[in-house]
Image (cartoon, rainbow, N blue to C red):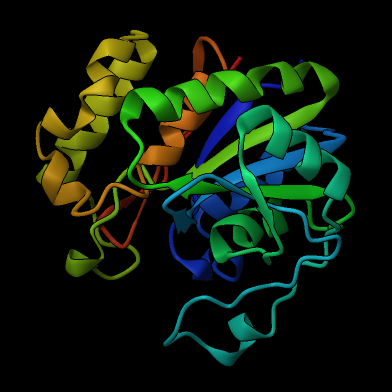
Length: 245
């Protein structure tokens, strides 16, 4: 059975910059052979749950201020309308056509560069409670037995207002929160994680919650955690990744 994954996708420049997280994602993809992939990305926020049924999702360049080379990147993986329809019925989601935002295509470009595995994206209902997001993950969990990889794509820490140069060390306020989350995950303290907004330095690391919430979905879809990667980019982006077996 495949694990569910939480991946910190960082800056879109992750695809072009050979950072530790870049190399980690390239290596991680070589260890996995999914039949299909479901991604819940921080960059598709919605009021109600939606699923993309596009057969050939376009690559969305949903950012600005980056080099032209980044805007030329394409990830031509197919969708899977049959799986999208199944998810809509299973989860009570509405079906829409939508392309891949960079929270989806940037990490997948590194993990599965051939773009030959079908990908279906689920939106992130931002008004849902932490409990309800974990429950969403639980409802996705049985799909793992069918060789479907469930990915929550966000960032363990994400305060772009305080972004620093790429190689800047992690300041204490970032490390405090990242270490707290890491400890709760390793200790399987899900009650603490349900109240993550009360963690030390939580509000400074996540002025808005959407980059943390995919972690709750991935956690709900799996069991015990295995830390896969820890690094930092731009000082404030902890690039941690976790597998939930």
